[in-house]
Image (cartoon, rainbow, N blue to C red; front, side):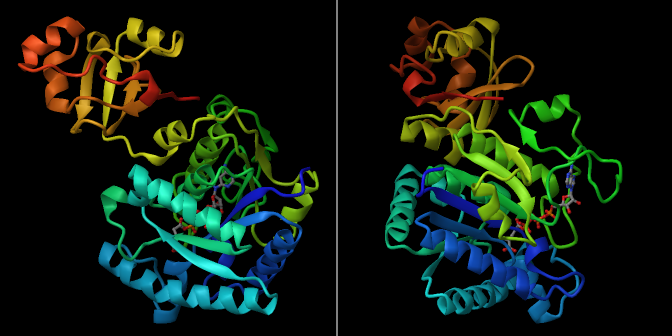
Length: 373
Ligand SMILES: Nc1ncnc2c1ncn2[C@@H]1O[C@H](COP(=O)(O)OP(=O)(O)O)[C@@H](O)[C@H]1O
Ligand SMILES: N[C@@H](CCC(=O)OP(=O)(O)O)C(=O)O
């Protein structure tokens, strides 16, 4: 194993807090801090994505349920985030390890200039030997532009910094064929070559997490999909024993490993694939699907049969086959209004239909990324 790797470690509320009080699980946090500081000392670049702001805020305010309304959640997160960072800073400082707080919203990654800026900030912090501690900026995030859960956020951050590993620390030791809490016979899964396999294996992932957690396994699988398609090995493992991270890096078979896929070499294409939120869907006929997937061509208006969503030129859209399966995503050259008029038409008819000369392609191949299963 190379001595200097970039590691993104995400820890969930269920590992950071005690049930049912919601108080911080201090021994787990201390052990996490020791492990991450030691990995840093060994020369690795380390980013921690930590949940817990809402859980800690609730405990501070004596609330026994995760808040439902957005304003309450935002207020509670504002209370909890400060306390969480104070605990981290005290513990990391004891070990002489500098840290930084990075609060992100989805829009920080959607806009290309902000995406590049966020990348530069992380790069600078890592060069300084700092461990950035990342969370969603819950206090200001609005629904439409939210990561919504820190599993997805951690995968986006891992893709942004081009990490080697993404560790998802949770309150089960690995992924099972079904939720082990309700299915004692659930089988442990140690290696997933492709996330698409999980559907074939009929793995049940439930749709919600524990009392304080948000996404359960669904969001962890989605995070693994994002990270592995960005070429990042992803591991789901137990959050209560952080020293396992070191053992995994030394080659021990702990947790569930998701094998990395060949990554996109082009940084801009990585941003299109992983940073953007699609604003619409274009449905393509068989010929267009073939031209894009097999021949690497641009998308022309002639191949579009249907569309959904409201989008403007340069927004991200999903390109789907007739069944709705996403085959690619990219930046569109026309608005949804324009596309309604020109879908199915030849390129030489566009000027006459719209009354002005438009782009030759609907999505140019330089702005298009194939979606891996
Ligand atoms: N197939 C599965 N394998 C393992 N755990 C599962 C599965 N399906 C659902 N779960 C549940 O997901 C929970 C972890 O999700 P969550 O509570 O959101 O954790 P975190 O706070 O770490 O993000 C586990 O406690 C487990 O009950
Ligand atoms: N940003 C939120 C975390 C949301 C979240 O994904 O929580 P979890 O499922 O426990 O990782 C918080 O700090 O409470």
